[in-house]
Image 1 (cartoon, rainbow, N blue to C red):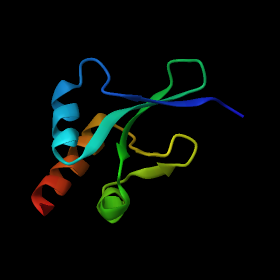
Image 2 (tube, one colour):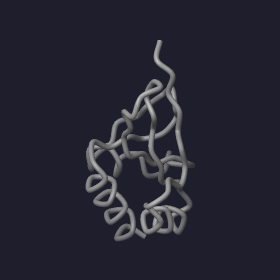
Image 3 (spheres, rainbow, N blue to C red):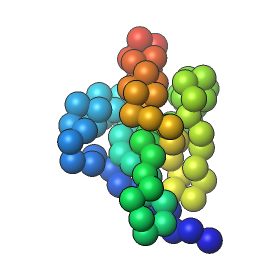
Image 4 (spheres, rainbow, N blue to C red):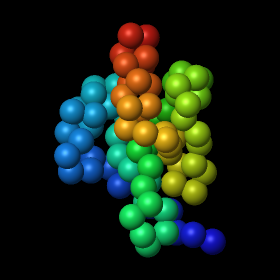
Length: 86
């Protein structure tokens, strides 16, 4: 079984971090294994917004308990959808 780790507020993603925090969420990355394999991720209390996240391509990572995205652009699009929903 691979080790999975959520790293909140990664360096260089301050704008995404701030947008997520304004929504009560945490932006970050999921590191899989000990290598450099990472995926953009969104965590926190996501139950109320899970359908929006799924509609924007997010996948639930049960090991890290966060939603992962294939690209930072997909995470950005999900945040935009959540911001317009407010």
